[in-house]
Length: 115
Image (cartoon, rainbow, N blue to C red; front, side, top):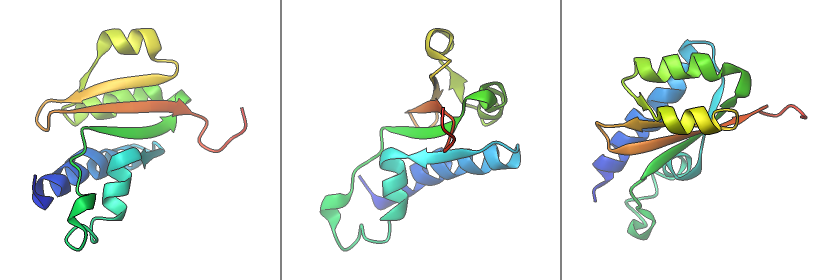
C-alpha cells in the first residue's frame, strides 16, 4: 500500500465530501481513521508502521440535514444503501463509493448542541 493511495482516499473520500457539504451550506465533520490519516499524513514517511489504508469514512452531520446530505453525496457519484438508510436513517446513513471501493457512514447528531 502506498502513500499515494492513502492520499487519494483522504482527498476523494474525506475532504471532497466535507468541501461539497460546506458548499451546500451543510455542516459535517470528518471522524475516525480518515481524519487521523489526514492529521498525521506528514509523519507517514518517518513512521511507516502508522500507514493503514482506510476502508471506510466516518462523518458526523446534523440530523436535520439528512435530505440535503443525501442529495449532495449522490451529486458526488456516491450510491446510497437504500435499505440500510430506510431502516436506520434517523441515526445513521450509509453510502458507497464504487470508484474507491469504500463505505461511508454518516452519524446523525446535534453537533455540539445538547439533546
